[in-house]
Image 1 (tube, helix red, strand yellow):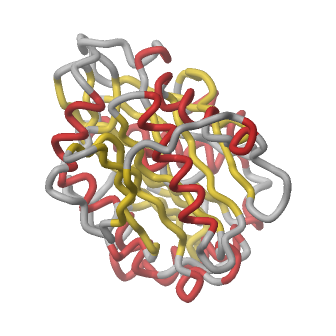
Image 2: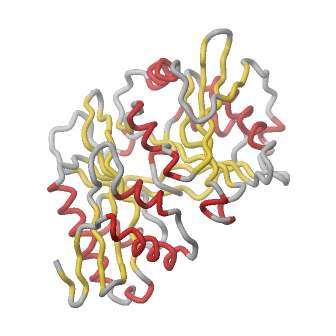
Length: 333
């Protein structure tokens, strides 16, 4: 496929340096090549639907869709999340070029058997994405806790009994996590990423160049809450992300357990050298209440759009009330 002198095609591993250079030009900072390879080629569901636009030896545009097992009610289908979408600054005066790239990506998704597509467009692309890449569903709440000043006052004001004991389990999910996940998520008919060992192992691979840690809350012999926190490794990503911590996964059997864990997570991350902020993106009533009670402050929410390729699903993906989302379900925010 061509657009004038620009060739639009599937990426190959040989394109990694050119894709990395496009990222650097667009973002103003580099990304570890292991991260790009992990996104474009190394997934349990095969190579993701992805296209790059090449002008000579320069990559001037890209679209990438992460495949993911998406649970819709009690059925697991093939989902796809729009992640890397970028146009070289020198080519942004050609809006039909980027729109054409997106439309070609949508066609590729359908050919690859994606059932439900969703994405979290940024401020620059949201208008275009709403037009050509899906139905606008709503806004997902973002929350932050900043260290080093008087932010997070709810953490100080609310009386709270510190029940339970926190433990750190390193980067490997503990065996009993599967039991907690089943209890915490229950059998409520919703749409969410399937939290299987396959997803957790791939999503939080060392190839992402992030420093992860599982933090667990036990009451007696029972695990009642767990969170995966992470910081992009400054030695690999550069100083921009240093001290910015994220809660990628969060499971709790109750609102109280969630609050108890989150308060301990705040205290735990606060002790990390250079910690500046802890944030989380969440759409789940129980967890949202726990996040607010723990003292996190609301931040600018993130829009989500969707395209449904398969009819007859148990739940309607265009009904935003059906969705449950946590930070790790998306590429970034």
